[in-house]
Length: 425
Ligand SMILES: NC(=O)c1ccc[n+]([C@@H]2O[C@H](COP(=O)([O-])OP(=O)(O)OC[C@H]3O[C@@H](n4cnc5c(N)ncnc54)[C@H](O)[C@@H]3O)[C@@H](O)[C@H]2O)c1
Image 1 (spheres, helix red, strand yellow):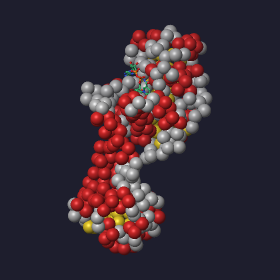
Image 2 (cartoon, protein in one colour):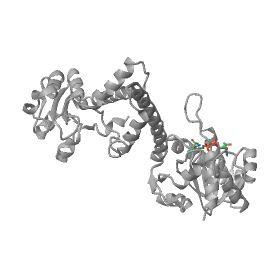
Image 3 (tube, helix red, strand yellow):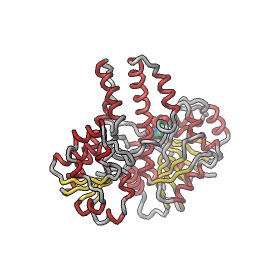
Image 4 (cartoon, protein in one colour):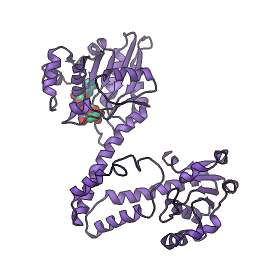
């Protein structure tokens, strides 16, 4: 069992310290607020959380958890520290890192006389880069050059929610450690040996980002459900019933489907149906903003692709894939048709390879859509990928049709994979 220091005795720190002590570790909680420290030592939680009082009383009485305001005292008696101090918003919405930087500096200074290993685990929520560029340098900068201690720094985002914090601590979606050093991850996992959850190790930046993405996703879900509720009410449907059944679909709705960064969405249904809901909201002055934001986000994403092509400086472009996804010849509102139209309008020499499209088989609205947006498609289509390559100074990979090309065809030529590359700077 480990000797653990927990810095910050707020919601996260207090619950974490109490649960670690319950699970057999020897824990010292540290806070700058002496009133909080006194309360923890008296078994009186400084935060209101169901079940915490009983737990705190038990672990303080047994001596498994004690609290102090003295950081050197805590560091002298432990081998691993969890940092859970607050990271509130600044006036401008940035992450306020004052407390967490201060703690890291103090840890560095206090470890001056230690030998052996010491592990610092950041649990506070911080944007990727802060740990690497500010916190770790703050800690190492405060360590005297003569120090003999081997300090490792990693992160371990916390997923608990207030009001169900102990249960969430015991039943996390997974235990995530950000590090490139597997033995460090093992030290952290050992703290949670009583918790039967999947263990995952990723880089520190991904670990930090995942926490933000989870919270952004939760917030988006609330806003989405609220807008659906408003629309449903206006359309005479029961929003609660609607969302209950939407969630019952775990194949396409509550699932990994559609959930990866890639190119813009399109096709014959998504844009059309989104527009119908938005138009209804406008007519009824419902003032929704998430769903219209989705459409404008999609257009912006398309423009990112255009910008990347412009930045490449190449004029002869080969596009792989034209329909909105592979294995369909539906071109209606395909973002690749829109991209092709924009590039042609800007004077690019474009050739397109999409074996799923046979012009003679297009009909109805599909044909009408192409005639309106790419009237000279016959001249642009290139059935032979080798010919596409010899035309191109730059290849754009639009759909999974690209995965069926001979990889040799792609070598030695600048390639923008629209399914993966739009996030790059
Ligand atoms: N509250 C949540 O539900 C929750 C859930 C997951 C993650 N988080 C994240 O965890 C972190 C902590 O959140 P919280 O809600 O527990 O914060 P909190 O504000 O409740 O507690 C932070 C504690 O840190 C103490 N502190 C400040 N400076 C200190 C220092 N130099 N040394 C020691 N202690 C110091 C404060 O006195 C306070 O007790 C934040 O980054 C937050 O975003 C919070």
